[in-house]
Amino acid sequence: MTLLPLPAFNDNYLWMLHDGQRALVVDPGDERVVFEAIQRLGVKLDAILVTHHHADHTGGVAALRDATGAQVFGPKHETMPEPLTRLGEGDVISPLGLSLQVFEVPGHTAGHIAYFGQTDGQAPLLFCGDTLFSAGCGRLFEGSPAQMLSSLSRLAALPDDTRVCCAHEYTASGLVFARMLEPDNPALIKRQAEVAALRRQHQPSLPSTIGLEKATNPFLRTHLPEMVSVVRRFDPAALDPVGVFAALRTWKNQF
Ligand SMILES: [Zn+2]
Ligand SMILES: [Zn+2]
Image (cartoon, rainbow, N blue to C red; front, side, top):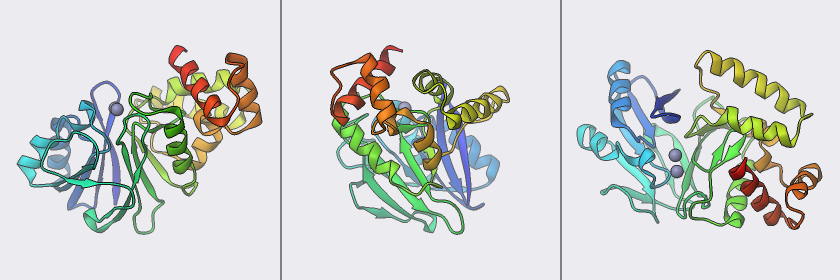
């Protein structure tokens, strides 16, 4: 199976997975990018997976479905381009013969879902939309800090080698904020140098891995005493884990 981030708009990636004959795409906000890819690769689009309702993730769904007959999957509790197969917690789907589990990960939107699964002989895959970014997380447009913290904790518990397929290239700016919080974290220093080199060559910084995110992403590190004390410099009233997470998210919004 080949995994490809297809760049779209300013900083979106539409993730494509294909076996040389059949393909799936995740969150196709722009159908043109996907049409170009399936033509270039000579593959048939079998499935469209959607994580949440924002237009930059759904804008191309109807055109792609109508032109290719691909089956569309999306969250149970959000407004979606109909018709589609609606999914919720615990559902398992099998596009391209894979087995993908569905997690409900509210926070960025109220009904956001993520897809996790294994491909033969390869590291696991996570399509997490706008929930987890490399060195960051999605803004809380509809959900609460408690929901987002619980969603991210769930993703952090996945195997360390899981390939994390985020929907936006926000890594470099996330790392600037992360370095301000933890200037001496060696994993962060190394990641920042690697991402700078990739971006200079216009290469994606993704996929990341769960192991790398646990070592470098401040939003997966709010349980650590060092991070708690840094966040309390910004908001002394941040006491419990949810309070610390909420303060960190507010700080990032103002950064
Ligand atoms: Zn979004
Ligand atoms: Zn987005």
